[in-house]
Length: 125
View 1 (cartoon, rainbow, N blue to C red):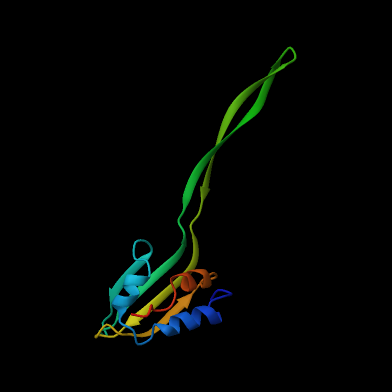
View 2 (view 1 turned 120 degrees about the vertical axis):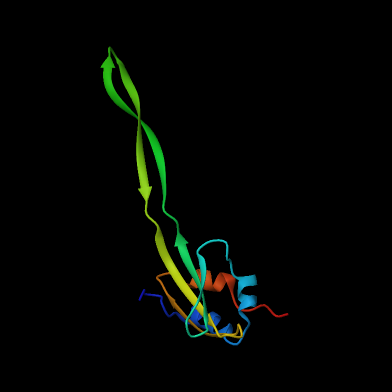
């Protein structure tokens, strides 16, 4: 478990979804990236959100001296490639019963609060 796995703010927000229809959650929380849903053998559906940063890479260039001609330095442009790994911040899973009502949840990660708080509690109709 991460250091903020069960912080109070994340727990309060997640608790607020208990008893709500999963369709409300899917309308309010993002499903465009890091989201999966799975039908479970017991009739529940698990709605899982994985938050963090994707892996990416970039190139950087710099000038380096490679020699001298008289008083002038001869410069060469060099390029370095950098790979930045993915970072997992938080996984939140809500479980809905066969009628689509959220009955429980689980979460884990080192940085859940900004995500859980940002997408928040159910909106009033």
